[in-house]
Every structure is written in structure tokens, then in C-alpha cells.
Length: 120
Image (cartoon, rainbow, N blue to C red; front, side, top):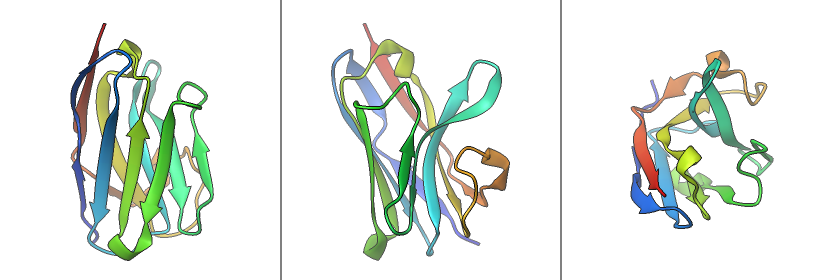
């Protein structure tokens, strides 16, 4: 069983930046960040594969950057130019194999979530 430990949430003013980190206790293939969204349980914010393939939600393209350090089993989400609508609990998720990025129910492991609050 792989455990995910998140860190880096907090409160910032609009336009500010935060970096989230998620460290897995074992090797994973896909790692991603989700947040709740209207009409959905959670939406994929960004995902990254073991060999660097990545994807972003349209709402964060150009502002957020996902990266990973495979040696540390860690994924990062650099969030710049934050907006109040980015306020949410961000959940790290990981899958053991190749899956469709946004199919949250196919992810094998989930973190506890970290709160991001952006004030206007």
C-alpha cells in the first residue's frame, strides 16, 4: 500500500504563488492533483506520468506547473498568479499503471488533502 503525504498549502492573496508537494511511499506511474468542482466530485487540476507526459485543466494552463522527482517519488505543483476561484482543498492522487488522466476512480491512492485559500 502506497501512502501519499501532501504539504505546501496555505493562504495567499490573489496574484500570489504557492507550491504543493506530494511524496509517495513507493513508486507510482501517474501522479496528479485534484480539487472539488461544481457538478463533479473532483476535477483534475494537473497530472504527470512517470516519463514526464503531463496534462492541465484549461483553467490553470499558463499559471500552474506540475513536475516530479522520480528519485524522491515526489510530485510538485507550482501555482502562480493564483485567483480566488483556485481556493479549494487540493488532493494528491497516484496510480500504479497508465490510466485516463481525469478518471479519478481509477487512481489507486489518495492523499488527505491540503487547503489552498486565495483572498481577493
